[in-house]
Length: 261
Length: 275
Image (cartoon, each protein chain N blue to C red):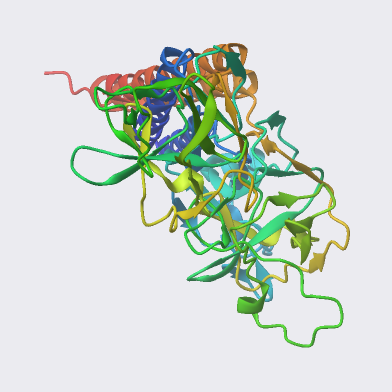
């Protein structure tokens, strides 16, 4: 009886985690380059009251044994890296990776971080930086005499300078891919950092090594599907309620047992 | 009269409490990937079977109350938890769009290599680890079928190794594609004797001792890539079971109460000595 109380409590804790993940997805449904997450659960260990296969007599064994489970736990919170939609902004420094891959930026502590959010800006020196001022790696500086900026599908950055508008090559944007992008650690501000389970970054030009091409003037929208999340929220809430009912019922059973005397 | 029947009522309480634990576990796992619900099965345990069969002696014994109301030990029976059965019915498939989420349609299990040996699972939420191996959520490698004509049956040769440079894909027929290279087929096994499986936690199934699982390799698996199998727990059914369990528990408690009241009468009313 006490076991069913704690078992239901693990269920409530799991649904709470589920709800936290769903709330974060919904809160980021308009965040550029956001990737939805999903909580995944697995059952806990089992208590074997009667060992399966225990002998019950001469040449006879219990076919099933008696097992009760101990509840559930969150096995993983899996990031879903499917591509989001395209939001055409016409801003020359808005970039979308059409396929897999990440932009590299250098954070203030000197470490590399990875992002799918391609809404870049220029800082006072003309360097291409992200919203938080982290510079895009490899660094590209746009001269202040540039009239227009052109970024090809393969990542070549050209500025049209002078009155003739002659293109001047400023550099190449490189993107990286990981063996297991789901193993990247999200650190907020649309950034991910490498982790032992993500593997080493493979740097390459867009369009090579199964990485996506770049598209200038558009942004990747979040891949959160509101309808999906709402349905998940309903099931999470109901599962939470059901688990609380189990606690109630167990409590009432305990109360009955106590009232016997 | 005696109150030995109180232990019969007690065994009923314990059985209902065990059932409640199982229902709580089913409900706690209502959102667990590919969870299969458990059911407890009870049977009647007659103490009379422990005795020798009675032989009529000549001359007959004096008739007693027991001769007319022969209970065959039924008055001393108890409820015994006989077994836990797992309901292996298909759970609902839910679309995720992730190319490494694989659901099995119909019967069968994936094979994963854990430190304790090969375990079976139906939970197909796989991912790649840092080395490019296809692993489950615990980080244990998923196994593929032994290549056609290969003599080397070592399990380590069946780990699925991706290069990590190319698009990975698992077809509905189980073909594992790394770009255009075919790495083989994902291993799906059928267990002809599902009673030989034992839940070991983490969505995995191990094998029971003393029972032959009769494993058969499925040559052409029927999979759904980009889907996950949900839990087959039906909340409505579990809630109903919970109500009946709770009421049965209360009823056995009432029976204990009644025995208590009877003993009370016996001690304090029948046995009352008038001053």
